[in-house]
Length: 192
Image 1 (cartoon, rainbow, N blue to C red):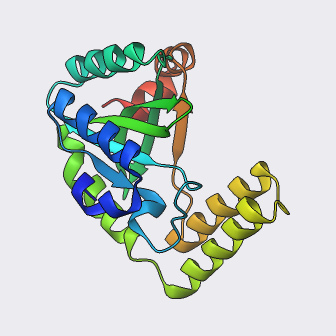
Image 2 (tube, rainbow, N blue to C red):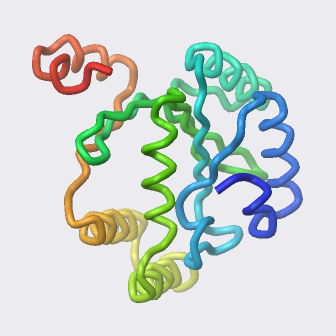
């Protein structure tokens, strides 16, 4: 979902920050996850953004320059997963300061159609699943009855159950990824 469509769910600082960043990168921002659904809790739920680019290297340099300006530069994680058997890869950045935190993922432009289609499916979840997500978020964010690891475990398994399969997904740091693709299995499975 694009920035203007989630504007009402963001506070002014968040919206202004993302608008400025979007203008600097000159790319549309696609918000994913709970911000696109009814289980979003303003000020509590995490924010996830995806961008798609023709030149992933140039975009990564721009993102890293901007994040460095905010003193938030960290080595991105290389992510690899499949959607309906199609391998998808990108670079995931984590940004956090006193005012805002979010995950920011950069993908090749050719991944856009399949990823946005999957994100649209993920936006339209059954009512019962929404209620369950709202309940576990309430237990986690407000009552502190479940730990972060329990919350993450429940949420991930809920999505696996809802999607009727376990998505092949992996996040690597740079060294892990280079070791993986050097192995014969990694090269054959995830050559993109």
